[in-house]
Length: 188
Image 1 (spheres, rainbow, N blue to C red):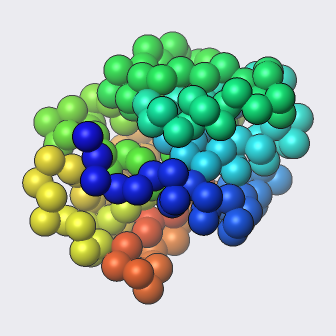
Image 2: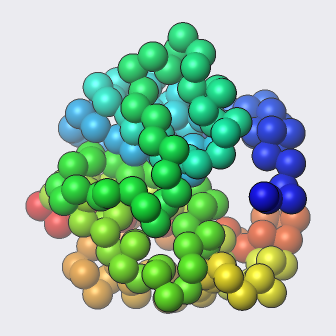
């Protein structure tokens, strides 16, 4: 079991509100049929996707605290999937937007490339990937079971498949996390 006090973390995260990065990305989304929030955590960004008018929002998170939150009336239209990111069956060309905040580094190194390729294939042509990725300069990089890539490695991952990177940021959050933000559009 994880030693991270997730319930406390989620309560604090809700107080900060939704991701400004996701808010910015939503300005570029024209089709709002289906979205997925990978590693939804506090579900504050799920709220933003619902409020943005997506007809269907999938929440992918295997934490029991998320399942408890999802019982709230507000989330009656949300599809909760309790699998982890590696186990989900990503169907090609399904989502208009994929949002993954501080979760993809939990994928094991040997599975990272194939799992992320599956995630990206699930985005419809013209759709967006929005990610806050934990980079290789984070304090937690000593955990060898996780995957940490540099800013350039993340950018190259998208560029080799012909994605258009709309925004890419590279910063230290001041609390030991190196956050790489990417908003990328899949070719039409």
